[in-house]
Length: 311
Image 1 (cartoon, one colour):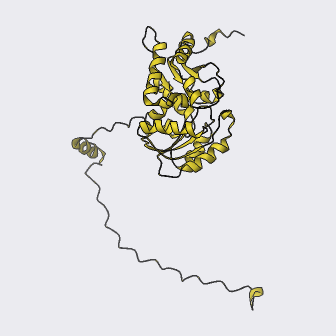
Image 2 (cartoon, rainbow, N blue to C red):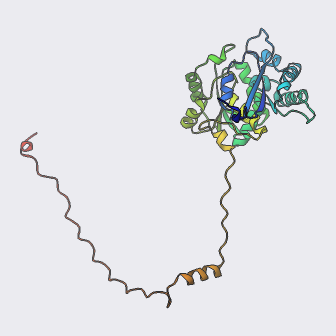
Image 3 (cartoon, rainbow, N blue to C red):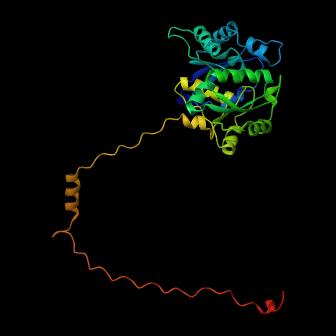
């Protein structure tokens, strides 16, 4: 069978993704990506360090980022995303901005610098989109890494109203959904505008709609905001069922224009609709109807014979 008429695959726009060496949720990232967009992932070199602040610093060194971005340039992505929360908040707000600049310069082409985002920068962007200044926080990290995230948020003017963390240093991608949901329920203890679930290695895609329905607030996660922010740079919409962040950023269709109708146009149209001889004469009004006769109040039915006598 001749299939030349198919014309080959459709052109794709690319998102380059730099992830830590232990990142295991490639498939989860893809779930937010619409047709017409491809993800091109690369990983930082392996280092024999458990999840900690030391690891966050190692996987976010500028030289490491530059080499990773250069490895992606061959497939010509139109934006690059650093998919790691702790690696992008460990240096504070200034450190996150410096990371973006390092990646953008490494991906420089004749068209200019490559647009770059990080998970922690995307988090602040998403909170701004939602108008959230007070958040509940869920992490799989140790207390010291969780505290570093709180300091990053405080630097950006975000208040953490409640938090829960697992204290894990490895195998974070194996955490089941039920543990994420349990932590979320315990973290929402104050008046929060939003719940944030941190760590790109923590599965969250399917729990977001459930938690939003239960907690009655927006729920955002590390992988969600990373893909949402990167796709925005391409003018594309992230896809996901019943996720308030994605719904809030969708463009609304314009309201239909209502043209004013001039009085003389209405008068002319009304005159044309009248029968010859002018408006018809209305019949005289009928006398008011007599009030309805209501049936007597219903009484309890008499007892059946077998019900008579003491019970």
